[in-house]
Image (cartoon, rainbow, N blue to C red; front, side, top):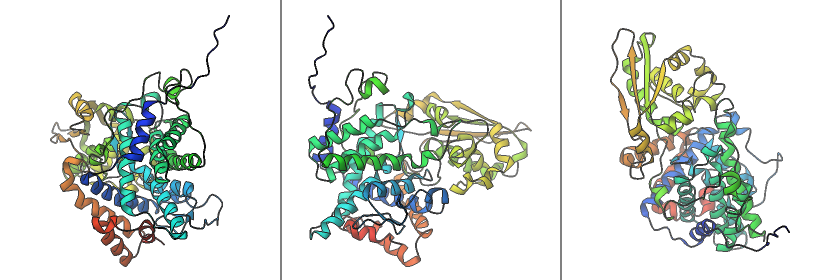
Length: 480
């Protein structure tokens, strides 16, 4: 006689409960984390404003049904749009992510924790405007910063040891999980409700990484995070209306995430949830390039003066790098679009050597047609340095090292320029933050008139003034 499987409820997966308890009950006390969140807020929005220069980005923005305005809806900074919070979250994070210029987290899994800001800011504005309409007090920007720290932590700690990319899955699943957790809590959800929403995010599972890799690299990688954070908001709103959760979404034999999509491995949190990720977040300050290539770009720019007049005499170029860079952005052959080019270690290095700088326009077709770029790419060899690969994963270092050396046909060569920590690394904060503020101001100037830029800078740079600003007042600063 066949064994009958008993349909009995199991205990909730501990990881779901740990994330939920953190989202609901944790008090963020780290001043370093909160002040870093202040810089993440500025930098992320600035990246979004710069992206508004590009029609390929703006074609995705606005309401799904043209002309729709949602009363007391969520505003999209830098535009006149007022949308439902789900689609506002998509709009905001699509802008932020478009140019591959916002913050980064590198571990067993990679990602961009500020992708969650679209969901956090949209729901904060939605909650606040509804409260004001009811004669109640709105949220303040301190609430936004706290939830940014929490979203960074959930996404980043999940990424430390749980590699989605090795399963062919995209890191934006962790955005969906983190957004679902913090937004449900922001909406007043209990620990049990946050657990339910997070379980829904795992059941949703992940998109494939197809669009991040040759031969299919494409623009979906620029809006995938907006899609994920907006879905997290949607699941949070559904949960708050009473939708059930799935207690063993991760561990259910045969049907849970771990068995179906994670090769049977157990998902773990490598460290207790606190504020580690925000404190150690990586900023893209100098160059809008995939982060594994940041130090290669910096090294190439340093070599520009020495090689710019000898491009035709170059015999070979050696890029010494780490395993993750080789696996993700070591790319040969034709590059078909800007999304393809900004994820190519050789293209980024060639641009740095030829032009002595790197900006978003260098990925467009006008620059890509320069024959010197593909010629230099063809002369490049990538070599893994085992020490670089070890230090990349070392929790006390988290280096992202690259070295570049150019060899000429007459037998001479440049020095090997090696850079272990990029400008946006925690170890270079004192050097990086003034430049980050300059980046923010420059990006504001692409969208707003002079006086409005000054008002925004004055409010955002002053931490004490920023945290006391209500969310509606903050969003009003960016109205077009």
